[in-house]
Image 1 (cartoon, rainbow, N blue to C red):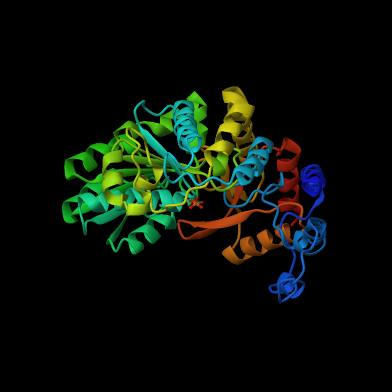
Image 2: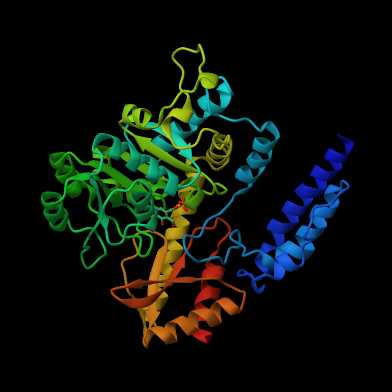
Length: 435
Ligand code: PLP
């Protein structure tokens, strides 16, 4: 254990140094494909090596190959943060190394998961009584929700907007369900009339509405879609993987109008709730259907425990990490007010950036900014915008990504890291203008 104490101290010193200095590192890794592999031995060591050797190689070999998602100027995709309480809880989770498949295989892991997801439910203003459990990613949560829908209507179609995330396509493919894409309006929201038409044409197992789409963070009008789903007997799944955490602030709850009618809803604390990846929460008002779809009880997992929840019954995985510990730690150590302050600041920074773009000649904001993502472009061709993005990212000072909206290549700036300041956003704007 003396080695462990020394190694743990060195590892925590490494983490502290990394977090203090990450701002100085190039956000986007500059290595060539294969460079990291070439620097690593082909074969494992025969003799034990000290942990210090792992830390040394982390610095010397791996770090150049890291794209720093925890960098305050990471503005690509959806910007995320592994905040300090979550980082520490991950260490404790590994130390305990429990598998929360059955209640008895760690009662605390199951019961803390029930408490932590209920705390999150209250924080984002979802109705009481929803069943929640944690999956690794929203892709798995959506797969689980659509498997439940298929259980009720085998072979039925999955309907979603043309702006839904590709995880919906992937789940439909895995479940061998037909997928129907519904057109969106000029602000990238699913068009209710088009959904009504598609529901008349297709026997639907499920409709997926998105609150915070991947490209533009548009919000499908769930309150208008829900009655159509109910009439058609289709399962309504809401993908709030990104925008769900924003509902911690009451002023954003307009985006959750109607979600109380949903059969299931996914929120990702690992996207915008400062929780290290991976942590996705799937809520459902119909846990019995999920259990029917997923529960398989081989003899070796049979127990005499009565009135307990065995979380393996609600999703595809048997083995389950103790992810609730980090979610619980993040919620406790930030508190409702701390989370609200961060989310409000990120939205303020996004609006500020959008105002700079709007005021600058030749630049335009190309989609509404309901949360913390700005879609924008410079007058000119798609190729010119793509080249501009490459030049900004090559500086190493900031990392942005792109999407296509209305057939045009557009740049995206996503704010979501808890260390991002106004200066960071201003620097990104300077870099774009210089480029
Ligand atoms: N849903 C939306 C709206 C997303 O933007 C994403 C990813 O960015 C996902 C789902 C998939 O998330 P995950 O990586 O947790 O599977």
